[in-house]
Amino acid sequence: MVGRLFVVFVALMIVSSCETLKTAKPIIPVKEYEAMIVGRLDANYVGTRNCLSACHFHDKIRQDFDASTMGVQLSRKSGMPIVDCESCHGPGSLAIEGLTPEKVEMDAKEGKQTACDYKSLIDLKNIPAPAQSLICLKCHSANATFNLHNWNASIHAISDVSCFDCHNVHIGPDLKVRPREIEAMCEKCHQQPKAEFSLPSHHPVPEKKVLCTDCHDPHSSFYEKSLRKPTVKETCTQCHGEKAGPFVYEHADNTEDCRTCHTPHGSVNMNLLNVGVPFLCLQCHPGHATDNVTASAKGAYYIRCTDCHSQIHGSDLPSTTGAGKFTF
Ligand code: HEC
Ligand code: HEC
Ligand code: HEC
Ligand code: HEC
Ligand code: HEC
Ligand code: HEC
Ligand code: HEC
Ligand code: HEC
Ligand code: HEC
Image (cartoon, rainbow, N blue to C red):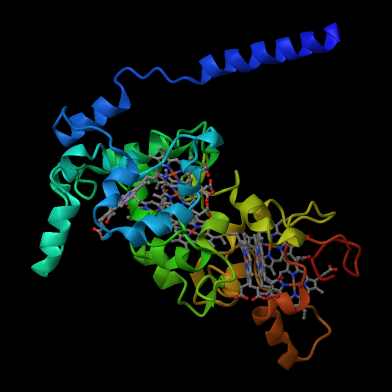
């Protein structure tokens, strides 16, 4: 019995010390910080209920938001930061000042749509990109949202792309970008890949079988071109595992970087090749023929290299002479 009480006591101690660890101690309280952005220190938080009770203009926004992953956190029991309209739009007391049910009724009689004084809220659309992202990052710190670990050093952050550019908070309950929409979303800024994916040989991104985000992390990574994996080869062999090797007969160190022969997005040549066969091979090898062939067959030696050298990525089997020539 005493032992059990002791366990409970220790557990309580741990829980209570965690509570103090959890309490944030910001330099400026968030409220004042946001009121400063608005330019009015007399603004106060009023809560979603007060914000929206008088007029139902934003009911659709509210419904969508309540159904979203962030909206579900509204319960204090979740232990998550409370997310409501004012978490992003800033304190709303000034916006709803004078917004009484009577006024709404009067406006309705005159056929008018009642508007709150939304100019007193944070002007989300027009603040600079880093400030926009900061609205999100006050909760989505690198610790809270692991994917955002590299955000501050990312090419997107540095190039003034903000969270808002990709995440359309009020488009519906989906806060994440839906897989089907990713390509169009990226291509609104990246025209070059769009052109490449329309070439005859391309990764099936327009066909929605491969996503830009299979290879790139939109929030950036430690690796070149924000790739998800440390090297291009590892990026490719996620899906093309059979090309990873190691092989008994390697094609020198060519396959260490698939870009030696391939381009990732799209190409005019078959198989996403930088240069078509045989010219690809002839960049590094002379053409050849063997003696015992007819003159007409000889041509093949100079054209269709991979008809015979079919295991061009590496092979475990020797050719007929016992050497590795990628014929088997
Ligand atoms: C996670 C942050 C966030 C939360 C929470 C949020 N909003 Fe927004 N809201 C935004 C952003 C960002 C924009 C600006 C979007 C843009 O760039 O067009 C916006 C725009 C709006 C607009 C203008 C829409 C338009 O088409 O111009 C309204 C109205 C609005 N929000 C109402 C609400 C209401 C009501 C709630 C609470 C139910 C809410 N918002 C909660 C981030 C948020
Ligand atoms: C007041 C705190 C807070 C703010 C501000 C906030 N979020 Fe969130 N957000 C949360 C919480 C809590 C969750 C749910 C837990 C989770 O998935 O991390 C969440 C979830 C999300 C998700 C969905 C994650 C999933 O797995 O489905 C996205 C996307 C998101 N937020 C984007 C944003 C963007 C973009 C902004 C800025 C416009 C923003 N958030 C502002 C707290 C916040
Ligand atoms: C270049 C576009 C882009 C930008 C900019 C961007 N995101 Fe995302 N985000 C995405 C896509 C696409 C997904 C879908 C998941 C995936 O494939 O990684 C996503 C997923 C998420 C998720 C879901 C949780 C997770 O880890 O999978 C959260 C939360 C999130 N983003 C928050 C943010 C915040 C906060 C910012 C700004 C600091 C931001 N994003 C900036 C494109 C973007
Ligand atoms: C709002 C515009 C915008 C959107 C949307 C956007 N990007 Fe970008 N992205 C940029 C800018 C600006 C740069 C900086 C370099 C440049 O100009 O190409 C960049 C850089 C990059 C780079 C790095 C290029 C390099 O040289 O290192 C990659 C990779 C990239 N984006 C992928 C994506 C992907 C994948 C998506 C969709 C999930 C996406 N971007 C969505 C604007 C955008
Ligand atoms: C199969 C993997 C893969 C897919 C899918 C993919 N990329 Fe790439 N992307 C790469 C690799 C690898 C590079 C580096 C190419 C290089 O260095 O020549 C790259 C380079 C880039 C660059 C930088 C280009 C430059 O010239 O610096 C941008 C921007 C980019 N990709 C955007 C996108 C967008 C947008 C999509 C989707 C429409 C996409 N990528 C889909 C693998 C991929
Ligand atoms: C997310 C999975 C995925 C990743 C990562 C990936 N691929 Fe692919 N790759 C595919 C799919 C799917 C196809 C289409 C297969 C089909 O149509 O039968 C394909 C096709 C190809 C083709 C044949 C194209 C053609 O025209 O027939 C080549 C070559 C190729 N990939 C090389 C690469 C290289 C190089 C990389 C790394 C930059 C890479 N892949 C990364 C999934 C992937
Ligand atoms: C020395 C040049 C070279 C290098 C390096 C190379 N490839 Fe290839 N790859 C080719 C050629 C040539 C073809 C077309 C084969 C044919 O015509 O039969 C091809 C075809 C492919 C195909 C489609 C056909 C198939 O066999 O599935 C994939 C997928 C592929 N390569 C992936 C990769 C990956 C992943 C890497 C990097 C690990 C890589 N390649 C490196 C030359 C190369
Ligand atoms: C970027 C240069 C490069 C390209 C492109 C290239 N190779 Fe190679 N290849 C090499 C190197 C380097 C070796 C190793 C040479 C050695 O060990 O003597 C090699 C080895 C070979 C061998 C084995 C030679 C031997 O003596 O064992 C064959 C066969 C071969 N390549 C065929 C091809 C074919 C076919 C293509 C086109 C699909 C091609 N290579 C494209 C550089 C290249
Ligand atoms: C009709 C089949 C065939 C075609 C087509 C062919 N090769 Fe070969 N290749 C061979 C054979 C067989 C060998 C000798 C293999 C052995 O020694 O076991 C060989 C050997 C090689 C070697 C090794 C050099 C040496 O002297 O051992 C290289 C490099 C090579 N081929 C490159 C190419 C290139 C590049 C092309 C296209 C321009 C090509 N091959 C087209 C069948 C072919």
